[in-house]
Image (tube, rainbow, N blue to C red):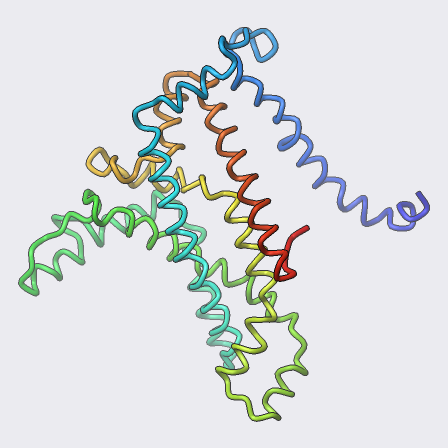
Length: 298
């Protein structure tokens, strides 16, 4: 208690954040119970009867003819985004860190993280202007070179690549800020010692910069693994269409159509709980794996 009193200012600063998490993160956990009930919006959570059997909604989801396709699409899109999205921010942060002219560094940094603030509706408009079959800039260029038009946005062969590429473009600059902040905490004397020993720029990056941010890389990777079943509802819902449903339909879009549009909130809660359990397992497993290299979160 004496320690708390001595640091009361810090606890006071922490209090609003704690209140936020209690109200919006912990109290709503009680709502998970509707996954095991026949939820009626007029009867409420406590008044709604228990489903018979209690796993009815999980069984309905598992026995759905789309279960395997939904799970495959969700995992593939998430893994693609994870694999292709983790390296570009690191590379960009290293380039910023090695850039000597401060005005050039700040200018390019501002340009690269601006896409993060664009909504997916605006990004869809940009993609439409570039990739549209009739008037897209890229298709016009292909035709002018003697090729034939490609319907990028309605092609099952191209759709996942467009999803991954557009997200990488949107988040690379913003993600680089985190790694750049971690690089600023590396002891400058390490760089000076390496240069005195004759190390070139590439060796300095490989032996000092990258090991210096290894813990941050592992931390972000573990956090992203916990959301591996969140393949990006907003992005996919805006970009997909009936022609690419086979490769674009994920758990969240199916829940939106089958659960929320039909007011089947219990089904939506059941799928959400399923996703949370998978995410928890992945976070624990990845953390245990990372601890072997001494980089675990806990």
